[in-house]
Image (cartoon, rainbow, N blue to C red):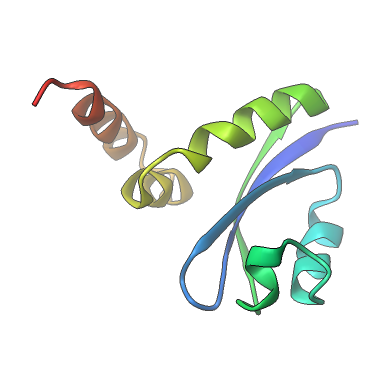
Length: 96
C-alpha cells in the first residue's frame, strides 16, 4: 500500500498540497466540493504533481516540505526542473 503527496492547481492559480492513498478519489472529492476549505471556492482543481511514499508518516513529513516553499520552488518541482529547484534551494540558504 503506498501513500502519495499531491499538488493541485486551483482555478485561481493557487496551489493546494495534500496527502492521500487514493489520488483519483481525492481529486474528485476536491472537485465535488468535499475537499479542503481552500479548494471549495477555487474549483475546478487539477492534479499537477504526485509523489509516492512508503508510509503515511513519510507522506505527511514530505507534504510539510513544499508547503513552506516559495511559489518558484513549487513551480520547479511541478515542472521537474531539478536544476532550478537546486538553485532556488541554494539561493535561500545564501547570506544576504
